[in-house]
Each structure stands twice: as C-alpha cells, then as structure tokens.
Length: 251
Length: 274
Image 1 (tube, chains in turn orange, blue):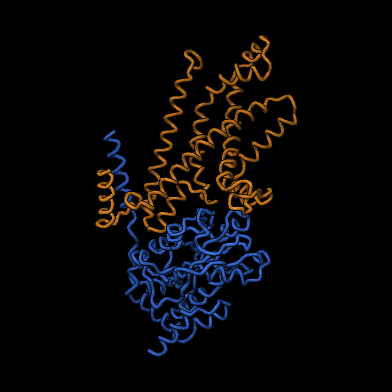
Image 2: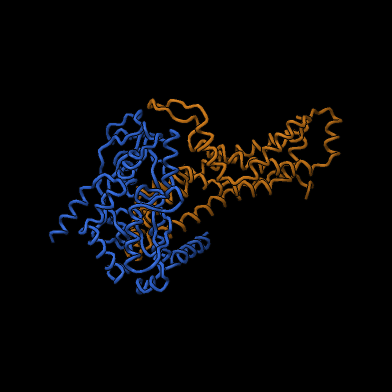
C-alpha cells in the first residue's frame, strides 16, 4: 500500500512540476472510471469473441446445407454484416431496432427497453465478427480435401458427425491464423460501443480527458492499454495454434 | 522485461512531449489577414447555436459572433464543436475563439482564457418523462441517466447522487436515448431543457424539468490563454461589457425566446451604473 501511495505521489508531482497529468494514477475517481472501462472492454471482448466464434461455427456448417434456402439465408447474413460499417450496425440496433421491440419493467418499476446498450453492443459486434468468421471457417473447410470427407462418409458418418469429428478439426487448424486476425480486429472494434454510451476504455478515457484536460496523456495511456490487451490475445492465439498442431499434418 | 519496460516508458515520454500548443502572435492581425474569424460553435443547442431548417447555424451566440465579425470587418467561419473537443481545437489553433455555451470553471481556466464579464449563467437540471415521477436529486441514485460527454456537471452529479450515467458524444444522441426509454432522465443545462420543453414539439409533451436547478454556472467566451490579455482578448472583453451595458444581451434573450435570466438583468444594472 505504501508503494502505491508513493507512485500516486510521484504522478501528482509530475502533474504539478511538468504538466504531464496522468490523473488516473493519483485521482481515485478518475482511476475508478478507467478501471471500470478496462474491465468493460475485457468483458465485452471475451463475450463477443466467444459468441462470434459460435456464429461462425454454426454459419459455416449451415453454408454446406442441402437446402438452397438455408444457404441463401447464410449468404444474405454474411453480405449484410460484412458489407455495412459496424458503427452503422450498432446505431441501427440501438436507435432503430430497440425502439421496435417490446418494453419490460425494471426493478424501479420503470419501462425500459428489452435490450440495453451493453446488450446491443455484444449482439452487434458478435454478428459483425461472426459474419467474417463464417467466411474464415469456410476457407478452412474448403481446404480440407474432398477425399477426406468422402472417407468419413464411407465410414458411415452423417453430415453433422463428419463436420464435428473430421472436417472441422482439420479446417479449424488451417484457419486459426486468419481467425486470430479477425479477433484482434474485433477487440479493437469494441471501442465503437463508445457511441452508444457503453462505459468501455475509450469512453472512460474520454470522460477523464474532457474533465481533466489531459488529452495527450490519456491518448498515450489508451494506446498502450490496447497494445497490452491485444498482446495478451495474440499470445493466447499463438499458444492455441501450437497446442493444436498435428505433427506431420500441413507442416 | 526490464528493457521492454524501459522502451515502453521512453515511447510514452516522447509521445507526451509531442505537439506543443501553437503560439499565437497578434491574433487580430492574423484574423484580418485571413479575412475570416474562425469560431467554435454549438449546432445542437437551441436557441444558442442550432441548425435552422435550411441547415444554417443560427442562434443567440451566432448573433454575438456576427457582432465581433462586424467590428473586425471580417467574415465568419463556424466550426461545430462539442464540449469534449472545443478546448483542444482552440489550443491547436483550429479556431480563434469558442462561443459554445461553455461553463466557466476553475479547472478550465488553466487551459482557456475566459472572457469577463461572462455573457450568461446557466444551472444544472434534468429532463425526464412525467411518468418517471422524479421529486429530488437523490431519486436519481442507481438509475440510468443520459448525459453529454465533457459537461462540467457530470462529475459533480455522479459524486453527489450516484446515478448510473450513460454519456453520449452529442445532445441528439442523448435525447434519442431518452426518448427510447434507455434512461430515466437527461442531465443538462436548465436553459436547454426549458427551450426544449417550450418548443411546442409534441414528442416532449409528456416530459418535464422536475428538479430544482443546482450549481449555477457562468458561461464565457473562450480565447487562447496567450490572447486573454493581448489586444484580441481585450477587444472581446470590451464588447462583452458593451453587450451587457447596452441591453444587447437582454434584447437577444427576448429575440430567441429565452426565459429572462436574473444574471443578465443584474449585470445590465451594475454596468450601466458604473
């Protein structure tokens, strides 16, 4: 605790003596806002990563469906979410779709929308990144040799079984690097939630600098924080890639 | 690890040292040479600075800016700003002055030259649907309250009444969210709330300003600190005295249908007698 206080004092001195004002280091109110922002960003990123991978898995499987209607629906979904800007999607969900949904009653007895701003951010980003994941998984699935699928069929696997036990495990290894790229992008995209008042990192930093006027300092803190968050994700993806490597397969 | 840390720290220090604020030499000469005064204004704050049906920015503050431009014999270029970016714009030299419903606070005086006498005074209140049944400030505790980024009262209200603030980049976004039921109230200057309610728009028929206005705050025109005691700052100060003394501000208040402010009447009386 003593050293924490010493660090806070040092930053206070830095602000007074040199005008470099990293207020989150010594002002408890600013620090609490920033930490809330950090945890919201991490939480939002993890939720969206998990959901977008699920969307990708299901979408990629449905893309190989026999029914042309299902295939067309998946193609339409991918086109819609891949070809429109994520900020526009977010605003569309929050300001347009939300108003069309039924209202519910909250614990204070007030009428509130069914899905709040955080909920829309999760939904919107998961669908957006999910659309890309479908295409990424498809590229992996198409890289699995036809002969392998036929062999699975010959052994009596149904389409779902061969997807789960044969095709997907191979395809997943092939597309992991591309998936990693998309997930890094997804983490960065979460900053857009700022536009609908989700208290993530950019939002928190903007709150701090618009009141403390330390824009340059907070910009640097913000960039370094994202470098750190993405570094953790990249490290995790690389580890995952190594763990899944099949010796001798696909080098 | 130690080396990495050192690299990260030195990167941070270099980045922090970048971009020293632009130093202004005689601003009046610069403005006259350009033939244009560039002013940061609000375009979402009726009736101070807002878009008329033709898309032009008009309002009480715009009338004041026109007075300044006429005095200098130059044209006006208006840059819409928000509470969150206007001071940066001024420091970077992208605008020559701020006339954008800016509250005159101690903290802001360290970065912006605040012109006295202040041209207006506002206070803090909320806009809420009547069904929210708000009676006092403490009713906001734990409730979602929409607000606009960079407003000086956000921090004070969060510390005192602990609402769950949902802060938006601009006023229309926050009003939209309020209309959509995403928050129980909208935290803002009482002047804007009064003008929104008295605008006669049917969508605000079931809304009210239920609380007692708090934390009265003077508004000021902002110039760069280096201009505050230079000819440019002095010119604006003199004009501000004149606006109060001649009754120009009271006349503009009537023109734009703003509820009469005790502050303007008092200033008018004080300056006239001096």
